[in-house]
Image 1 (cartoon, rainbow, N blue to C red):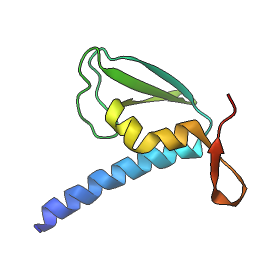
Image 2 (tube, rainbow, N blue to C red; image 1 turned 45 degrees about the horizontal axis):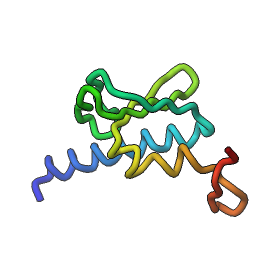
Image 3 (cartoon, rainbow, N blue to C red; image 1 turned 135 degrees about the vertical axis):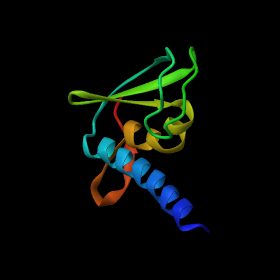
Length: 94
């Protein structure tokens, strides 16, 4: 594989991991789900079509916006579950 392509792929994966680690480090977070006005997903950097679901994850004074695919693929467990003793996860109380 071309070194520039491999570096770019690692860069994108590093970006996603850093975003997920940021969210996990600030748990619990406030989550708002609603129709997009045409935002950009901060995880995959893809466009979120107007009217499609977007997830706004509020961390302190910042908001991370992700599309449905990125939320479902990688962020759902972080936002909806709480860490328990021993590194296992359990559901957050409703």
